[in-house]
Amino acid sequence: MTSHAPKPARRRGTAAEEARLAIEQAETDGVARDAMTLRMTLRDVSELKRDPKVPMADISYGPDGMRYLGVAVDQGGVTQSTLDRGDTSYVRGAAVEAVVKPKATRKKAVKKVAATAA
Image (cartoon, rainbow, N blue to C red):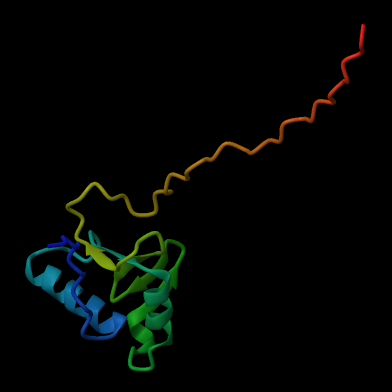
């Protein structure tokens, strides 16, 4: 018997519908929209912006970035779109720590000197 990791639940709607549902659920649980952050994949953000069913009034842009239904949107950096309700250690807009790789260097070639017969 092999043990496979469980597959994530399939999305049933568009990115906009799923985000709206998550926001409304969080709001009914008592979370303020200012505390929420939509952490979305780049693909889902692109889908959200291009969705013809989403009214123009639902998406806004400002100096702090994009907002959907009054909730801040962080684009990229995740493998699956989620709604952060403000109860985790996630800090909106914080820079993701980049992994620094050491720079590859080539070793210099050493000339081989033929041994002289004595």
